[in-house]
Length: 487
Ligand code: ADP
Ligand code: F6P
Image 1 (tube, rainbow, N blue to C red):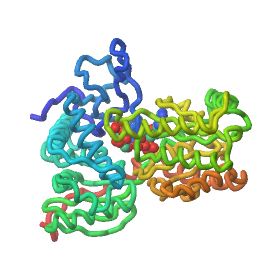
Image 2 (tube, rainbow, N blue to C red; image 1 turned 120 degrees about the horizontal axis):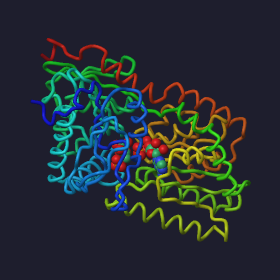
Image 3 (cartoon, rainbow, N blue to C red; image 1 turned 90 degrees about the horizontal axis):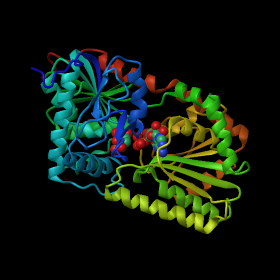
Image 4 (cartoon, rainbow, N blue to C red; image 1 turned 90 degrees about the vertical axis):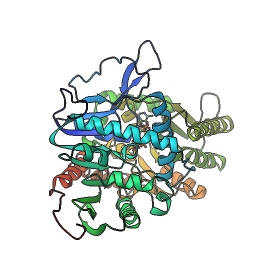
């Protein structure tokens, strides 16, 4: 019998992700509330599930274990997968976010390797696979998401050989020389190869993976067969695994509608009035993560102020930072560094009633975000490494007025598509200041021209295009080869 079979177990489309689109905020223990979950994965997949009949298995963001208030979405699509406090520490904070996350982001901070974290990762992946197996109807499509669940494809295949399994990695896939540091490298690769299709954000990630399979699984036939989004295939004994690149995107039409709505436009005008009509507004919106380059961004702005290329009277930087993974040491230290830097800049360059940096350590709702995008003269998206970065695409989608310029790090996946942004190497302090100054001084006609091109791209390649192309490849062909060179 299938494990944990429930009444809702006949979904023909199942999303499996570490997080549900909503998480339980237990800040007030007497009145826990459901809130939207942070991060790009939820922003991208939430509109997809809305348009399909399906189920979503994920963690509800709490380890309290007790009874939850009912999920607001009562159509039984959301299926919470519980985590214990130890699993939260070892699987989520440990293996997912202190081992895999830094390793996959160029090791910008050193990854930690811990055997007990690995065991927890194994156990939690098995639980997610069981939930997915229980939810999927016969022959269903199951779409497994991201680095927290890389063992799920093979575990699910063992439980349910009848389902079609897709896997998409939202973060970068590192070059083999970095990945090979991982003591459990072979198990992770075997886990991923349980899928019928493995998707990466960029062709580079897919190539890294194919090279790695060649190194680790010498018996297998790995071919490079670039065809549209599919860049290669791995021929296993009894089936074929396709590997491709599918750059994720945003709900461009939805954001544009929001940006055009009167309440948002009124809020944009209000923000501009509050910050000073004559000041140029620079904006940063990120999870507070050391990969996002917030500290380097603040330092570049500090450099502009110190050199007199900007002043508190003519320029303001608004930095919105979502609290994220707050108990992990590197995140705590990063937050302390950022907050100290904001204090230093405002202390040195501000005056009563006029500070150069407005820093908010909070999540804001979609309308407020759209209003902020609308108010920005310069959007700063400057990660040190990022799988894609949806904020860059959201900003573009939210500017039907063609205003504002986008400063974008070369190290964000989005830079491969948004080539008409002002690209910057955030590691280069002088260049960073120059590009910021260029964005602040950009000629209006040139800015509108660039924004038109950027918008064209983001509207054509929106999140529906992303999901559709991934799922079309997943369904194109059986994925099984009865006999062949690897058989
Ligand atoms: P990541 O997935 O690493 O967090 P992305 O840029 O791809 O990075 O996605 C971040 C998502 O989270 C975007 O949809 C963005 O709008 C949202 N977001 C980031 N910061 C905030 C914030 N302070 N308040 C609300 N939403 C935020
Ligand atoms: O897109 C990367 C990602 O890690 C998602 O998998 C994740 O849901 C999001 O960022 C936010 O991180 P977290 O779930 O750890 O709060």
